Each structure stands twice: as structure tokens, then as C-alpha cells.
Amino acid sequence: MPTHIVAAGGIVEDGMGQILLVKTHHGGWVFPGGQVEVGENVMDGLIREVEEESGVHIEVLHLIGVYSNTGVHMWHDGQTEVPTKVMLDFICRSVGGELRISDETSEVLWVQKDKVLDYITSGAIRARYEVYLEYQGAVRYMEYVTKPAFVMKESRDI
Image (tube, rainbow, N blue to C red):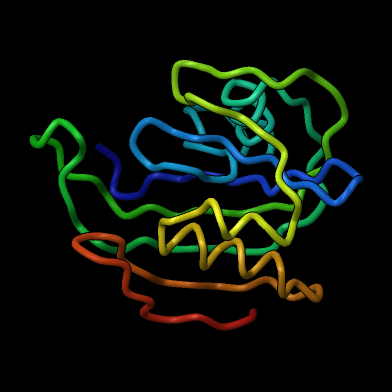
């Protein structure tokens, strides 16, 4: 395992005040995204992950947040230690595709921007979505841990 996992998240807007959400098998409702693969740049990884998880094609617009999950915990297999995650969140725009589920998602839907927090239960995902709601052009940096419980360690604009 690497010492850090690099991942990207996309808050995808549809131009009608709605945000794309996916329901994952392990994490409930989230905005789409995932790990960047070997040899792949961050934005291409995000474009791929959104399409894989939802069927939606996107254009990446703005970097809004950089996050470090510095908690140490075991993966779903109970054997593998998960390294520190570094995540980059972007505002994205839908440019096509059709909603569909995937191996990673059980539901996919568009939700009114002001109703998204009614769906998201994860403390980390809620905090990251709130960064989007408050976005004024500055990139937010956060450090947190998610296990055994969500704890914010640092949050500031950079």
C-alpha cells in the first residue's frame, strides 16, 4: 500500500440547481469520486470515476477543497490498514450521459442543491459539501479523521 491514497470528488451541477448524488454500498449517499489510478492525472481520474459511478459525463470547473483524512483504520476486509487519504474536490458541470447505477452504486439521482444535506449522513462528506455551499473562490484545506468517529482537526482557506 502507498503511504497516501489520492482521490478526487466532484460536486456535479446540472444547470438547473441540482447536484448529482450516488448511493454507495459502504458509504451511503455521497457526491461521486474516487481514487486516482496509477499513471492517471487527478482531473482525468475524477471524470472517469463520475462516469463509472453514475453514467454522467462532466467538465471539471473549479478546485474548491483539499482534504487530508489522517485517521488510521482497517479496510472493509478487516486485514488491510488504510493509508492517509488526500482528496481534492472540484465543482463540475454535467455535459451529457444518462443516469445509471454501477458495481459501486445502488442509486443515482439529481437533488436540489439546498436538499443535498438531507441525504448525506457521513460527517466528512457533509463538511466537504458545506465547503461547496460556502465557496467564494478560496480553496479550503481540512484535516480530519473519520474513524472511529468524525473529528475535524483543522479547517482554513488557503
